[in-house]
Length: 312
Image 1: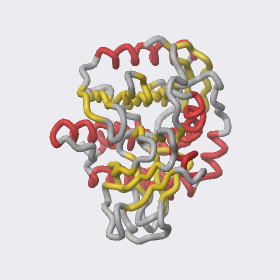
Image 2: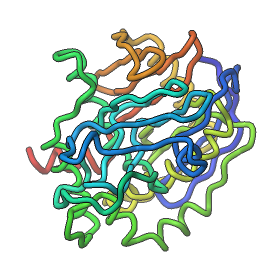
Image 3: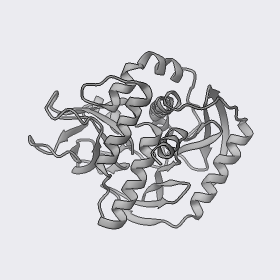
């Protein structure tokens, strides 16, 4: 994949490289957060009893709605994270796969869900992506290992010494909102960009590429805020990365990902997923009408690696 470097910014252990692909803005759609705010999308429990790993979404819009892998949904009976990106058909009502990120609550606080101003932290997205690929391969369902997701949320609580009566991942972020917001404010999305690469301590953590630049700008601060959680949770030395190094690693990784074998699965709504999972990378490319809607590449963060080593 050919990309054009636009800008690189770094703060403490975090580096963000922004770039543009050859083609952008090829599809007409809006993101889920915008659709909810405009009354065009409802995200609900499947029924009054609820299902931990399934939610109902109703698209009232005349165009598709995009929900991103890692979107945090708050409200209803418990907070959830979206398991994989969804390109929701116009005027459609479907069930989407999710995971619970709030172990200690199972009662209604609202009739539906809203979008939290952060996606899931980097290590959680990475681990979930690997699990979804494995479950699709074995069972044909885009599910995660719920117990392991809860364990990872607990490790974030421990690393950040967070207090949360319901053990919610969003409480971790909200409890340090002033620090995270100040951190996020140091980074700004480039108007020409539709992709970014996240680095921690010179290590590539994640890449996200979107079809639409306006959708990219919506998700940019959410992804940076999520990365900040891992920055604060990780215990490692500060390290600098040059813009040239960041761009080279990003381009090299995208080339490597293109060469990986893919497993093709139907999208949750429109399109198809081309998933990959290996020792270095996990993720997927969501396509609709042979056009890339979203590419997500995850790599293990230092926080996740450290926790795995500690557990032996």
